[in-house]
Amino acid sequence: MKVSGHTRICGIIGDPIEHSISPVMQNAAFQALGLDYCYLPFRVESSALEQAIQGLRAMHFTGINVTLPHKVAVLTFLDEIDTMAENLGAVNTIVNDEGCLKGYNTDAAGFYQALTAEGVNPNGKNVTILGAGGAARAVSFMLVDKGARLTILNRDEGRARKLADSLMRLLRREVAVYSLQKKILKKILNDTEILVNTTSVGMMPQSGVSPLPDGLIKKGQVVFDIIYNPLKTQLLAEAEAEGAKTIGGLEMLVHQGAAAFELWTGCKAPLEAMRKAALEAMRLV
Ligand code: ATR
View 1 (spheres, rainbow, N blue to C red):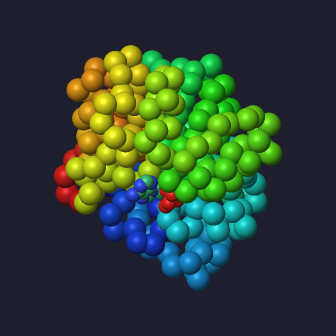
View 2 (view 1 turned 60 degrees about the vertical axis):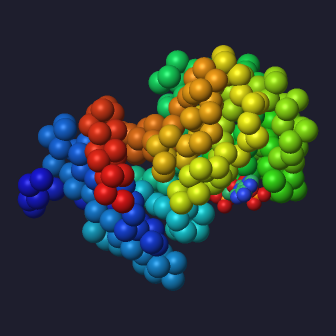
């Protein structure tokens, strides 16, 4: 990478930030297209968030990604917020348009792109989401927006109910809600066409466990696990063994990065270069 006086600056803010794969993935994308851009990690503590955002304007950054713990708090400091990001109450990408900072949420878009890139259209399908946290919110808003018939299952049923209420209030769509229990799972999974795991069950270092009991996944279903470490979770391994179509979390990571890249550069993202760089970075983390 050659940095000059013309180089445009992007980056990512979060705390901690050391394990982020985005710098490797975004710089590989700039390089693949020969763009004079550079992407850097910045550890920003919560108490310094406002100053960091003001700094983007002051130093004419092209844009940044925002990760934990700032995705919600950052909204207060922006000039404009995209509708999806507003509904989600979370921003993961900022574009600096001559000092006007606009917030987007490419997690939701990345999930949808990863799904459709595999030829899966959720419109009119029975989709079941496991989990009701921040990731489930992004996934569920996108799925409802795209016409899926949604069921949300969560260990804490009250939290799933709150998410469903929010979908009703903002998108005027009814979704079914249950607690994540074995006897309910069997019935729901039987009618499920697309299953999405947004819980942290199966994530490193607890990679040998699945959020579902054995024997509930069938051939013909689509199983999307948004966990990317490990690349093939226990849930995906079981789904694959049953002959279901599987999609891993790395695809969502790559597609959310690609959507941010396209917002900053206006160029079509080089997905293959980004995927390769993300995979290489993961071997190092
Ligand atoms: P994120 O922002 O990544 O979605 P989160 O908000 O902490 O993270 O949400 C984590 C999700 O994983 C929640 O749905 C959580 O269930 P609860 O709301 O009941 O806590 C789910 N989760 C975490 N550990 C779990 C476990 N051992 N069994 C079932 N669900 C679990």
